[in-house]
Length: 217
Image (cartoon, rainbow, N blue to C red; front, top):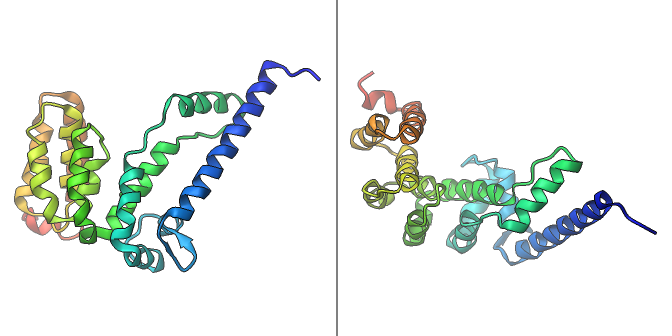
């Protein structure tokens, strides 16, 4: 029996997806669990909302979840994953971005844990300094204790680190006039990309409950 190139690609794609699913299942078994569900499962169920049973479950897992959240935040698509994504688009109309999905799950996890995730600050600072745009928001959700690390990152000459820090400051709760001013300052940056990102961060920060009072509105 002979296969066309397209069939070979389809078989390879299916095989890689199955291997990936198997890896996720294996990884999930090693994650902390609560009431029979893994950390990832609870994060998915939470939909990023920091209340309800999923959020309670994630907080119950507490600091045990930090190594896994850090690993998820650091995830990047390698050459093989990118090739699979390109091939997948030739056959099925879905976007496979495993790393981006892991990153979003990690940020949601840090949002729900909040101050419980304080022990992760040093590791997140290292990730931030490696030009990972997701580290800033993760730090911001931890709360005020992450502010020194985020403000220090504003001194970086790397635009990605600067933008990540601005994103983190926009997520800090409770916020302060000083933090809001730092976010606002980014709108005047000479780098168009930073200016655009800063504008989005400013809109996000100022649209949160209670912030209008700080702005004197």
